[in-house]
Every structure is written in C-alpha cells, then in structure tokens.
Image (cartoon, rainbow, N blue to C red; front, side, top):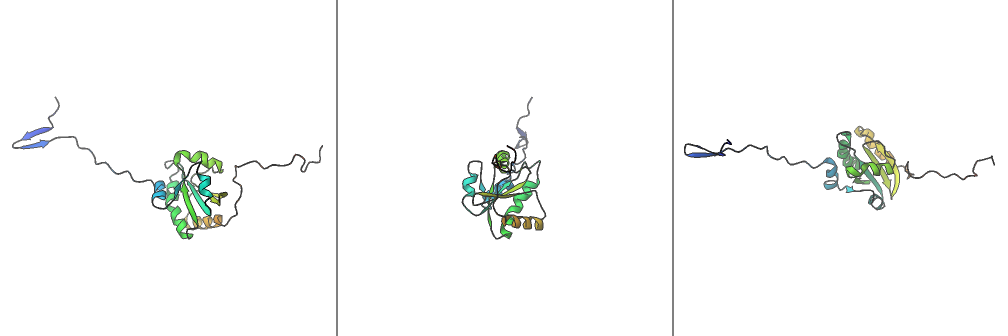
Length: 168
C-alpha cells in the first residue's frame, strides 16, 4: 500500500513528497567562455580560412578532451590573459570539440592542447601544451614574431625528376 502524500496529523495536513535535490545550473564551459566573455569565434573546417583571412595574427585553441587533457581548460583560461599581456596582438578562435581532430590534422597538430597561429590566412606555427606563465608569454611572443610558413602536413615538396640526378 502506497503512503498517502497527504498525511493528517491533528488539524494540520502535511505533504509527504520525495525530496529532490535542487537542479544546479550547469556552468558554462571554459571553452564557451572564450566566445561569450572574451570575443573568441567558433570556427570549423569550412569557416576557419575565411576567419583567418580577415587579417592579422590569429590563434585557434585545440583544447582536446577535458577528461583526457585537463590542461586544455587551463589554456582556455590563460589565452585571454596572454592576449591582454601582449597588447591584444591576436584574435582568438576555438573549434567545437567534435571537430577538433580533423581540423588539427589539417594543420599538423598532433598534441593536445595546442594553439594554432595563423597570420593573414597563412600558417605560422603551432604551440602545444600548457606552460608556466613566463615561458608561455615568451613563447607566444616569439611565435608572433615568426614569418608565415607551410603547415607541416600540407602538400609534399616537389622535386624535378631531372634535378640533382647524374644517372640517366
């Protein structure tokens, strides 16, 4: 027999319902906060080139799985601070988690977390891992001073069939 939710005791009625924990508000992820609070853009395989071609230095965060690579969340917190410390020299973007693997592979990134540096639509470098503040600040400053280059996995260098060959 189920207990009656209305249980009378004397002249007062008492409601006996199961107690449920209050629903906690799910906090916004640190990655999403880069967008909502720090002006980062969401990019994917279709939009990253157009975003990068808007000009100047641009940094894309590949945070990785937050359980497997918790330091990716740390990089998400530090990235806006690095930007501020370097005088706002770069724009920021993040890739949705489910799209990171394919897009990172396009730019030769194989470690998590990684920062992909682009300038005027071209590849500059990739900086992987979480670092102490001074090291991170110096490394980001150094990478921002590098010239554009070829991404490690884009294309295969072509060599003429006759170049450097003495054999016929």
